[in-house]
Image (cartoon, rainbow, N blue to C red; front, side, top):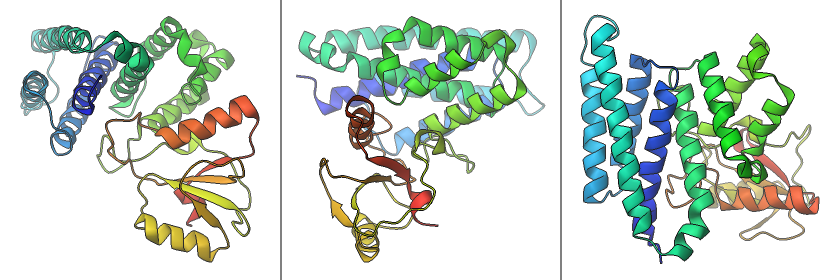
Length: 301
Protein backbone atom coordinates (compact mmCIF):
# COMPACT_ATOMS: atom_id res chain seq x y z
CA UNK A 1 0.00 0.00 0.00
CA UNK A 2 1.20 3.52 -0.73
CA UNK A 3 2.07 5.11 2.60
CA UNK A 4 1.39 8.74 3.45
CA UNK A 5 5.16 9.27 3.42
CA UNK A 6 5.48 8.00 -0.17
CA UNK A 7 2.41 9.90 -1.28
CA UNK A 8 3.78 13.14 0.16
CA UNK A 9 7.07 12.80 -1.68
CA UNK A 10 5.38 11.84 -4.94
CA UNK A 11 3.17 14.91 -4.69
CA UNK A 12 6.17 17.17 -4.05
CA UNK A 13 7.97 15.81 -7.11
CA UNK A 14 4.87 15.92 -9.31
CA UNK A 15 3.93 19.51 -8.45
CA UNK A 16 7.53 20.64 -8.96
CA UNK A 17 7.68 18.83 -12.33
CA UNK A 18 4.54 20.62 -13.51
CA UNK A 19 5.71 23.97 -12.14
CA UNK A 20 8.95 23.81 -14.12
CA UNK A 21 6.94 23.08 -17.28
CA UNK A 22 4.89 26.20 -16.59
CA UNK A 23 8.00 28.34 -16.10
CA UNK A 24 9.72 27.69 -19.41
CA UNK A 25 6.91 26.71 -21.78
CA UNK A 26 7.32 30.21 -23.24
CA UNK A 27 11.05 29.49 -23.68
CA UNK A 28 12.18 32.01 -21.09
CA UNK A 29 12.14 32.69 -17.35
CA UNK A 30 12.37 35.78 -15.18
CA UNK A 31 13.28 36.68 -11.61
CA UNK A 32 9.65 36.87 -10.48
CA UNK A 33 9.22 33.23 -11.46
CA UNK A 34 12.48 32.24 -9.79
CA UNK A 35 11.44 34.06 -6.62
CA UNK A 36 8.05 32.32 -6.68
CA UNK A 37 9.79 28.94 -6.95
CA UNK A 38 12.21 29.82 -4.15
CA UNK A 39 9.33 30.92 -1.90
CA UNK A 40 7.40 27.73 -2.63
CA UNK A 41 10.43 25.58 -1.85
CA UNK A 42 11.00 27.35 1.47
CA UNK A 43 7.35 26.81 2.40
CA UNK A 44 7.72 23.10 1.56
CA UNK A 45 10.82 22.84 3.73
CA UNK A 46 8.89 24.09 6.75
CA UNK A 47 5.88 21.81 6.30
CA UNK A 48 6.89 18.56 4.55
CA UNK A 49 9.32 15.77 5.43
CA UNK A 50 11.17 14.71 2.28
CA UNK A 51 12.97 11.43 1.72
CA UNK A 52 16.69 11.57 0.78
CA UNK A 53 16.12 11.49 -2.99
CA UNK A 54 13.39 14.12 -2.87
CA UNK A 55 15.62 16.21 -0.61
CA UNK A 56 18.34 15.99 -3.24
CA UNK A 57 15.89 17.36 -5.82
CA UNK A 58 14.84 20.06 -3.36
CA UNK A 59 18.45 21.16 -2.78
CA UNK A 60 19.20 21.23 -6.50
CA UNK A 61 16.09 23.35 -7.14
CA UNK A 62 17.06 25.77 -4.37
CA UNK A 63 20.58 26.04 -5.75
CA UNK A 64 19.08 26.90 -9.14
CA UNK A 65 16.90 29.69 -7.70
CA UNK A 66 19.78 31.14 -5.71
CA UNK A 67 21.97 31.32 -8.84
CA UNK A 68 19.12 32.82 -10.87
CA UNK A 69 18.40 35.45 -8.23
CA UNK A 70 22.07 36.30 -7.63
CA UNK A 71 22.42 38.59 -10.66
CA UNK A 72 22.42 42.14 -9.27
CA UNK A 73 21.81 43.99 -12.53
CA UNK A 74 18.53 42.96 -14.09
CA UNK A 75 17.51 39.62 -15.52
CA UNK A 76 19.89 36.90 -16.72
CA UNK A 77 19.99 37.15 -20.51
CA UNK A 78 21.60 35.65 -23.59
CA UNK A 79 23.95 32.72 -23.09
CA UNK A 80 23.61 32.83 -19.30
CA UNK A 81 19.82 32.55 -19.48
CA UNK A 82 20.11 29.70 -22.00
CA UNK A 83 22.45 27.84 -19.65
CA UNK A 84 20.08 28.36 -16.72
CA UNK A 85 17.09 27.12 -18.74
CA UNK A 86 19.09 24.07 -19.81
CA UNK A 87 19.90 23.36 -16.16
CA UNK A 88 16.20 23.69 -15.31
CA UNK A 89 15.28 21.29 -18.09
CA UNK A 90 17.84 18.78 -16.80
CA UNK A 91 16.37 19.15 -13.31
CA UNK A 92 12.91 18.39 -14.69
CA UNK A 93 14.28 15.28 -16.42
CA UNK A 94 15.80 14.18 -13.13
CA UNK A 95 12.51 14.73 -11.34
CA UNK A 96 10.76 12.64 -14.00
CA UNK A 97 13.21 9.78 -13.46
CA UNK A 98 12.77 9.96 -9.70
CA UNK A 99 9.00 10.01 -10.09
CA UNK A 100 9.11 6.87 -12.24
CA UNK A 101 11.14 5.12 -9.53
CA UNK A 102 8.84 6.30 -6.73
CA UNK A 103 5.69 5.20 -8.57
CA UNK A 104 7.25 1.86 -9.58
CA UNK A 105 7.94 1.24 -5.90
CA UNK A 106 4.18 1.32 -5.23
CA UNK A 107 1.79 -1.52 -5.89
CA UNK A 108 -0.33 -1.56 -9.05
CA UNK A 109 -3.45 -1.00 -6.94
CA UNK A 110 -1.90 2.10 -5.36
CA UNK A 111 -0.91 3.59 -8.71
CA UNK A 112 -4.33 2.93 -10.26
CA UNK A 113 -6.08 4.39 -7.23
CA UNK A 114 -3.94 7.52 -7.18
CA UNK A 115 -3.04 8.08 -10.85
CA UNK A 116 -5.69 10.77 -11.38
CA UNK A 117 -4.47 12.52 -8.24
CA UNK A 118 -0.90 12.37 -9.55
CA UNK A 119 -1.94 14.01 -12.83
CA UNK A 120 -4.01 16.57 -10.94
CA UNK A 121 -0.97 17.46 -8.85
CA UNK A 122 1.06 17.98 -12.03
CA UNK A 123 -1.68 20.30 -13.27
CA UNK A 124 -1.55 22.20 -9.99
CA UNK A 125 2.18 22.70 -10.50
CA UNK A 126 1.75 23.69 -14.14
CA UNK A 127 -0.77 26.38 -13.20
CA UNK A 128 1.52 27.72 -10.47
CA UNK A 129 4.37 27.97 -12.98
CA UNK A 130 2.20 29.71 -15.58
CA UNK A 131 0.97 32.41 -13.21
CA UNK A 132 4.10 32.75 -11.06
CA UNK A 133 5.07 36.17 -12.44
CA UNK A 134 1.51 37.51 -12.38
CA UNK A 135 1.19 37.49 -16.17
CA UNK A 136 0.13 34.99 -18.80
CA UNK A 137 1.42 35.08 -22.38
CA UNK A 138 -0.11 33.49 -25.45
CA UNK A 139 2.56 30.76 -25.42
CA UNK A 140 1.48 29.88 -21.88
CA UNK A 141 -2.20 29.82 -22.91
CA UNK A 142 -1.34 27.39 -25.70
CA UNK A 143 0.66 25.23 -23.29
CA UNK A 144 -2.28 25.09 -20.88
CA UNK A 145 -4.79 24.26 -23.62
CA UNK A 146 -2.53 21.52 -25.05
CA UNK A 147 -1.96 19.98 -21.60
CA UNK A 148 -5.70 19.86 -20.91
CA UNK A 149 -6.31 18.31 -24.34
CA UNK A 150 -3.71 15.61 -23.65
CA UNK A 151 -5.34 14.82 -20.30
CA UNK A 152 -8.96 15.06 -21.40
CA UNK A 153 -10.17 12.63 -18.71
CA UNK A 154 -9.74 15.47 -16.20
CA UNK A 155 -12.75 17.26 -17.66
CA UNK A 156 -14.78 15.10 -15.28
CA UNK A 157 -12.95 16.61 -12.31
CA UNK A 158 -15.49 19.02 -10.77
CA UNK A 159 -12.83 21.69 -10.19
CA UNK A 160 -10.60 21.39 -13.25
CA UNK A 161 -13.69 21.24 -15.47
CA UNK A 162 -13.79 25.04 -15.08
CA UNK A 163 -10.72 25.25 -17.33
CA UNK A 164 -12.26 22.99 -19.96
CA UNK A 165 -15.37 25.16 -19.97
CA UNK A 166 -13.20 28.24 -20.46
CA UNK A 167 -11.50 26.82 -23.55
CA UNK A 168 -14.81 25.58 -24.96
CA UNK A 169 -16.05 29.17 -24.79
CA UNK A 170 -12.85 30.89 -25.98
CA UNK A 171 -10.61 30.51 -29.04
CA UNK A 172 -6.99 30.23 -27.91
CA UNK A 173 -5.64 32.08 -30.94
CA UNK A 174 -8.17 34.91 -30.68
CA UNK A 175 -8.30 35.46 -26.94
CA UNK A 176 -9.48 38.94 -26.01
CA UNK A 177 -7.90 41.06 -23.29
CA UNK A 178 -10.91 40.22 -21.15
CA UNK A 179 -10.31 36.54 -21.89
CA UNK A 180 -6.70 36.82 -20.71
CA UNK A 181 -7.87 38.46 -17.49
CA UNK A 182 -10.52 35.81 -16.88
CA UNK A 183 -8.00 33.02 -17.43
CA UNK A 184 -5.47 34.74 -15.17
CA UNK A 185 -8.13 35.01 -12.43
CA UNK A 186 -8.98 31.35 -12.86
CA UNK A 187 -5.33 30.35 -12.53
CA UNK A 188 -4.78 32.48 -9.43
CA UNK A 189 -7.95 31.14 -7.80
CA UNK A 190 -7.00 27.55 -8.59
CA UNK A 191 -3.40 27.87 -7.37
CA UNK A 192 -4.25 29.56 -4.08
CA UNK A 193 -1.56 32.20 -4.58
CA UNK A 194 -2.06 35.48 -2.74
CA UNK A 195 -0.81 39.05 -2.85
CA UNK A 196 1.50 38.66 0.16
CA UNK A 197 4.20 36.68 -1.60
CA UNK A 198 2.93 33.25 -0.50
CA UNK A 199 3.01 30.55 -3.14
CA UNK A 200 0.52 28.36 -1.28
CA UNK A 201 -1.14 30.83 1.03
CA UNK A 202 -4.83 30.70 0.17
CA UNK A 203 -7.51 28.13 -0.44
CA UNK A 204 -9.43 28.10 -3.71
CA UNK A 205 -10.45 31.52 -4.95
CA UNK A 206 -13.87 32.93 -5.76
CA UNK A 207 -14.01 31.43 -9.27
CA UNK A 208 -14.74 28.02 -7.76
CA UNK A 209 -17.43 29.00 -5.26
CA UNK A 210 -21.18 29.34 -5.63
CA UNK A 211 -22.69 32.82 -5.59
CA UNK A 212 -25.19 33.51 -2.82
CA UNK A 213 -26.87 36.91 -2.90
CA UNK A 214 -28.05 37.06 0.71
CA UNK A 215 -26.54 34.51 3.05
CA UNK A 216 -28.79 33.56 5.98
CA UNK A 217 -27.70 30.55 8.04
CA UNK A 218 -30.76 30.51 10.28
CA UNK A 219 -32.23 26.99 10.14
CA UNK A 220 -29.54 25.79 7.72
CA UNK A 221 -27.20 22.78 7.95
CA UNK A 222 -23.56 23.79 7.61
CA UNK A 223 -20.22 22.02 7.26
CA UNK A 224 -16.81 23.69 7.66
CA UNK A 225 -13.56 22.77 5.92
CA UNK A 226 -10.06 24.22 5.71
CA UNK A 227 -8.35 26.79 7.92
CA UNK A 228 -10.21 29.97 8.74
CA UNK A 229 -8.91 33.50 9.11
CA UNK A 230 -11.74 34.09 11.61
CA UNK A 231 -10.19 31.60 14.03
CA UNK A 232 -10.24 28.00 15.19
CA UNK A 233 -12.79 25.47 13.96
CA UNK A 234 -14.48 25.66 17.38
CA UNK A 235 -14.75 29.45 17.17
CA UNK A 236 -16.18 29.24 13.64
CA UNK A 237 -18.70 26.59 14.70
CA UNK A 238 -19.82 28.77 17.59
CA UNK A 239 -20.34 31.70 15.23
CA UNK A 240 -22.40 29.60 12.81
CA UNK A 241 -24.50 28.19 15.66
CA UNK A 242 -25.10 31.70 16.98
CA UNK A 243 -26.47 32.55 13.52
CA UNK A 244 -28.99 29.71 13.78
CA UNK A 245 -27.13 27.02 11.87
CA UNK A 246 -26.64 23.34 12.66
CA UNK A 247 -22.95 22.46 12.19
CA UNK A 248 -22.09 18.90 11.13
CA UNK A 249 -18.78 17.07 10.57
CA UNK A 250 -19.72 14.59 7.83
CA UNK A 251 -21.61 15.10 4.58
CA UNK A 252 -25.39 14.65 4.88
CA UNK A 253 -28.11 14.86 2.29
CA UNK A 254 -29.69 17.80 4.11
CA UNK A 255 -26.48 19.86 3.95
CA UNK A 256 -27.16 23.42 2.81
CA UNK A 257 -23.71 25.08 2.86
CA UNK A 258 -20.11 23.92 2.80
CA UNK A 259 -18.02 26.88 4.03
CA UNK A 260 -14.36 26.85 3.00
CA UNK A 261 -11.73 28.61 5.12
CA UNK A 262 -9.59 31.06 3.20
CA UNK A 263 -6.24 29.45 4.08
CA UNK A 264 -4.86 26.20 2.72
CA UNK A 265 -4.68 23.44 5.30
CA UNK A 266 -1.16 22.43 4.18
CA UNK A 267 -2.42 18.86 4.07
CA UNK A 268 -0.11 17.46 1.44
CA UNK A 269 -1.88 14.12 1.47
CA UNK A 270 -4.96 15.50 -0.25
CA UNK A 271 -5.61 17.46 -3.39
CA UNK A 272 -5.28 21.19 -2.89
CA UNK A 273 -9.04 21.68 -2.76
CA UNK A 274 -9.77 18.89 -0.25
CA UNK A 275 -12.07 15.91 -0.02
CA UNK A 276 -15.11 17.75 1.33
CA UNK A 277 -15.14 20.15 -1.62
CA UNK A 278 -14.76 17.22 -4.02
CA UNK A 279 -17.71 15.41 -2.42
CA UNK A 280 -19.90 18.51 -2.52
CA UNK A 281 -18.97 19.24 -6.16
CA UNK A 282 -19.72 15.64 -7.14
CA UNK A 283 -23.11 15.79 -5.42
CA UNK A 284 -23.91 19.02 -7.25
CA UNK A 285 -22.91 17.59 -10.63
CA UNK A 286 -24.15 14.02 -10.38
CA UNK A 287 -27.17 14.28 -8.09
CA UNK A 288 -28.28 17.88 -8.61
CA UNK A 289 -27.86 18.38 -4.87
CA UNK A 290 -28.86 21.69 -3.27
CA UNK A 291 -25.59 22.20 -1.35
CA UNK A 292 -23.81 25.50 -1.99
CA UNK A 293 -20.03 25.80 -1.64
CA UNK A 294 -19.12 29.23 -0.31
CA UNK A 295 -15.94 30.93 0.87
CA UNK A 296 -15.16 32.29 4.31
CA UNK A 297 -15.19 35.81 2.85
CA UNK A 298 -18.79 35.29 1.69
CA UNK A 299 -19.74 34.25 5.21
CA UNK A 300 -17.69 36.50 7.53
CA UNK A 301 -17.72 40.04 6.16
